[in-house]
Image 1 (spheres, rainbow, N blue to C red):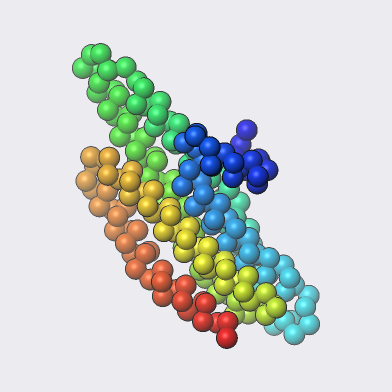
Image 2 (cartoon, rainbow, N blue to C red):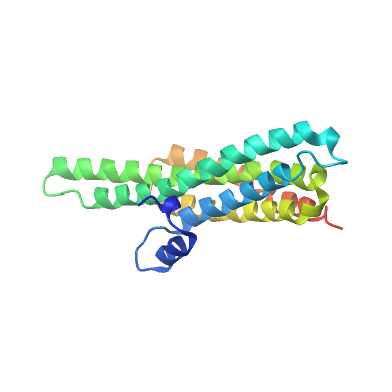
Length: 205
């Protein structure tokens, strides 16, 4: 069964089990999905509210973007489990001849890259939630300001968790240019995570 089609209680139990999936990457994606969902909720509960007439367009943009991120995060939660299985299959390829060894090595290297790029996308998407969380917290229904702020907290957690998974996969990749490129992008994103989160938390006074 698709991970995201499970009941929450079953998904959490599966995470706690002896099975390797769902693991940290899937949880990072789910954390990002809930962050986007909270920002989206603020938008939905701002529509039509008295005193918020001037921000209806902003809320429409917020709702559309948050919904797209939420849906993609759920897809990536499953994708993270899928790439792990692909990696395990690559490890199981035969290695009796030089040709088989070369094929297996190439498959493993590609699997490492795929396993790195899924959580990388999770982290990139989670980073986008900060702008949505700020908009929700600053302009959305102020009765829900803490929900907007929690969206930012979840976004930071999702980025950090996802990028940890990226790095452990990068450690097995021999393509130095690939590793350097992905690492630079992650470093750029991570350098202001604390600042962004703190700025949004400070909106609640």
